[in-house]
Image (cartoon, rainbow, N blue to C red; front, side, top):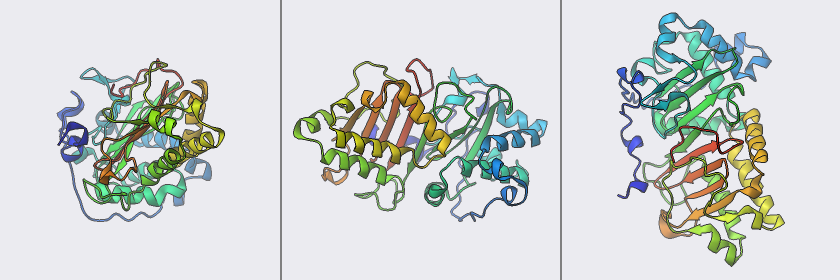
Length: 352
């Protein structure tokens, strides 16, 4: 199988990513049992409505509740580096930022109240209309919430800069309280889904993120012949190559060449891409995109390579601007890499 179509980190997540962290080997803990998704006690009994809307407040409460021993295991300085990588900004399709076997969010490393806080802040990072779909993705890919996820905290919550990162299979998400300058989501994020197995069937039945690709394909259908020629590319890039290209040559169809109705449709594609996330993160994406010139500075590319069923419904596509990358890979199952900032000079660990 060509490298582009393999998913090595999905097949085997045991990898020594970072020196200090890897003294605790990343051992995958799998469980097929379903997890109950009741609203966490911490929100029902203790948290105010304002706290429920501000997961950053829960990050601080979680941090303050940690023992010194716990902090030694999951808390790091803001720019902690290992193996020449800034751990805080790393992103991958299947990884554990701390040891999932001993430090996973479902283990006894955390108290019940701490687990409730972690769960509450996690769901607060998403649009509530997407909670059931996120639950399905977690169940299909990891056996449910709390089964194969880990967290780390960088900086000191409540100070000028802090960030909580949660990772797992098909998951990298961040909570930074807008303390990370110039970037959306606190840094690069990842989401994915393998709803019907490692190699999904045509049209990705049950995949919660596939409607995003269908929306993009609707736009392809209303392009004229010349536009399609510019948008359709034979070979797709490495999926994790989401480092910013600046205003250099970005392949694909310039959004500036779209008609009014086509531009409106592209905006609807973007709206659907950001829809799963909380409104503050959506607003950050919009702000970053505006600073770099808006959607008109982006290009849209569809890739003939990896077309499941050779049906002309493009499973793999990419929306890219000077400091905006949203790469959707649908073969053999859905992987989506996201990297958004307001300036291409912003450095992340997104792979180039």
